[in-house]
Length: 279
Image: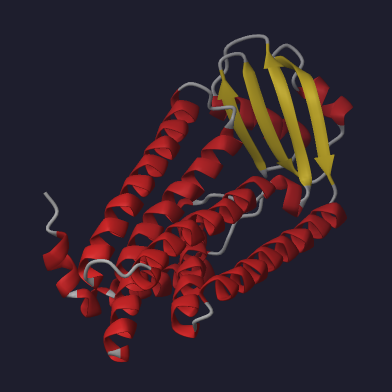
């Protein structure tokens, strides 16, 4: 059984843990970088109906050699393969290469200009989401320190999620950005729960209010992470062609796990420190 009271008594040293993890995530993102998805960097996505069994490596080698393009990624699931190819591809030439192995059932090509425009829109989406979230938090609490704590935690969650994407090779795509936007909402949700319980409620001590908020918040977090882990495993083992869903689940698993640390170690620690300083 978790001894919440003993845990909450030593809150000041614990604040440094999510700070260190956030710094590590920044270093990972800067040194490793983020891989961009096809819709951002431009390229071609082809779905192939396979006419005979073929391994992922064999199909990749067949296409790479056939169209003289080494930047080919292949995902095979039963009798279907999803192929991502850097740059534009002549569909007639590709059909010829695949003759006897499979037939093209869908073909989608994104030019680099459109990819650059998508990237710009993603930056705007993240910036506006974060700005409006910050304004809303300030309006709700009208108190500088708790508001900054909530915003800092949300920013840390995003940075750690991006660091995790760099570390595990999860591409930055429209889908993964959607996961990051969902993460902002979840992060603010748990932090508003915590801050409201600590600041607005008057019954009980600070520790008792914090324990109540922590039990509710951790239950929410564990439930959400379990759902995302289940989704990730289902995609990996049963429907590997739905890689986009796996990427969304992976980003949310990293971000939600980070949110446990940032909310209950950093935000709670800052709030307790702030309330004790006001006495």
